[in-house]
Image (tube, rainbow, N blue to C red; front, side, top):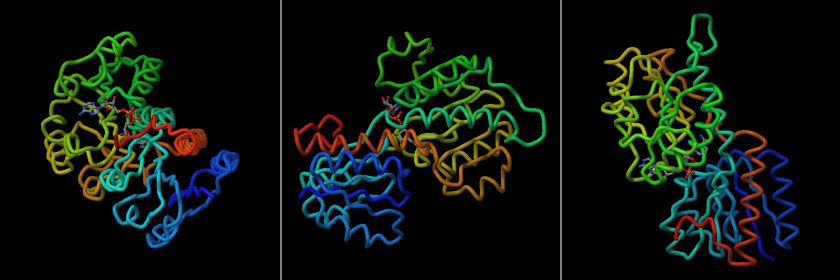
Length: 307
Ligand code: NAD
């Protein structure tokens, strides 16, 4: 019987697991659960005889792929798929997929929440500012960026965006001012919301040069990935510019240093929580199960990321 493994160090909400089970069993497959595992060896053991795998932020590296002798498909329930070793998957003919768009609203709402949190002195006593009328730069106008823009418009923010892979007209018809370079975006943004994926091109790409271009009092909101930040460059920029602030959903490797040096100008969630809503869990979990059934039964590779 076709076996589908859900391997989640940080489990899905119960209701999402029930939904996944229903889809998998209705297709005539068997569901195997490995939740809250703490030893990588348990993951490697569990993957040995399964045909399909669903993960969240779990690392599917070469060792996992090597152990998965029957694996046909792995789905990352989420947007970013930098936790999958795509080359290892491709080498073994395994289809790797993500579930784009399924958790975008959860992340977008968190980005807006973080802007207000930073504008209002991290909910501590003191006089804050309003986000109404401020300029918001959206760095990458994908599923999350687009929703942040749309929600922020409701707060009366002025929206700017830079994404070289999205048609200018598409952004403009949504009331967004499109800028021609990443430098221009940072120069105009009182708030900068980061939504680029972490890849060879973008890793460590946000550092001293871009951050020091920002207007006085600017705040950077990072719900993308910590890897896109050049942390040393950020420290240097923040030392030079005592007006800048940084809030992140992915704690920087040098978070302790940032807090020690910059205190309340910096904030990070203690554990990545952008996609941690019941709705996002259900959307991404069910999409993963449906995509696996679609691939195994009908060869549907719509969301394949290792083409
Ligand atoms: P998406 O794939 O829909 O959008 C990514 C956008 O980035 C695309 O529009 C693409 O054109 C653009 N892009 C790629 N390279 C770029 C570059 N060099 N410069 C400018 N734009 C570039 O992804 P999404 O759903 O919007 O998610 C964005 C990122 O947020 C993901 O890659 C993921 O790492 C992160 N994310 C985090 C959480 C969380 O829990 N905090 C949850 C979901 C996604």
